[in-house]
Image 1 (cartoon, rainbow, N blue to C red):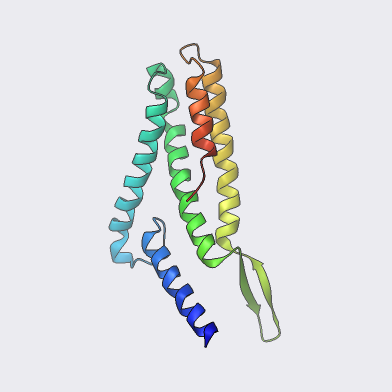
Image 2 (tube, rainbow, N blue to C red):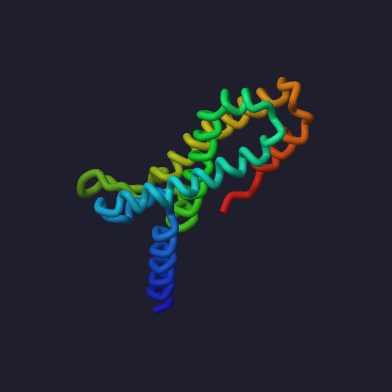
Amino acid sequence: MKKSENKKQNNEFSEDIEKDNTFSESLPEDDSKVRYKKNDKKVKEEKKKLLKILSKIDDNLIKICDSLLDNIAFMSVLLDDLIKTIKAQGVKEIYKNGNNQFGFKESVESQSYNKYMKSYQSSMKILIDLLTKDESSNGNEVEELKTYFARSRK
């Protein structure tokens, strides 16, 4: 009886996670515009946070880094979403190849998280390196970016 209660709670938790996930595939295809708007709003909010940190930097450098900032904001939102999914479903999933061959493998979400985290880290490193070489930066922005980068994920 206790196992069924835990399973019910896990299912309810998973449903709540799926509703909150920006990149969740739980929405029907007809709602792809809703998914896009939700995603786009979160990415714009993240970019706004980054631009606030970089507000005292030379505008030309900001223009050069614009696509980098877009990518960092996108990956930040994506990573947050992947973390929610991994917390709800774990890092491994069951596979089955035929009748007698089955077991566990690393989940697709976990693999995606690792891949995007590497890209996110290298993008942040590029941005921080650009700022340390920029004369208009007084160093505070670099520290704020490091704090932003090191913040705990949801």
